[in-house]
Amino acid sequence: MFLKYLRFWMRSKNQHGVHSPFVYDFVTRCLYRSNPKIKTNDTELSSKQLRLLLKIVDYFDVKCIASDVSQLADVLQTHGFTLPVTHFPPTAKTEKFDLVLLHQATEKISVEDLLRLLKNDSILIINNIHGHKNKALWNELVNHPLVSVSIDVFRQGYIFIRREQRKEHFTLRMPLTFIF
Image: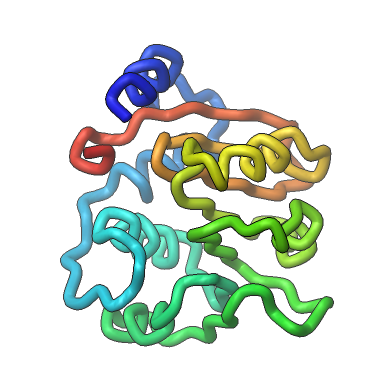
């Protein structure tokens, strides 16, 4: 794990290497913001992943989520966010979400399945993008023509569909407290 992170660190940048106003604001006003206190975590997410999720839900004013994480709605409600969480994969084929959180990729989940759930300005969060199961899915998403912004922060990846923005990929360092 340490060698993987070292290779990642060598090619990554911090917020000062970001020239996209959208990504710079996301990094400085959301990801690098101080961490909220965790009241309870009855999910399979780590406390660091949950902290980032809480910051993202707040920053983007998320109204609806699709996720494969159990008990997520209850944990979000404990932290002051009352919003519907649809368990992934949703049954309605036309439903769109502000945020889609994928904790564990399976063979049943395709790139098209994930992108179908997103609208313009939605965010897709994939945990453990350098892990064996999620790496292939992450690489496919980054190279997909509909994806305009992708951000690799080592432990998580963020995918955005923003029709108004040209395609860019960012590899960004997070504070060390997030990584280890």
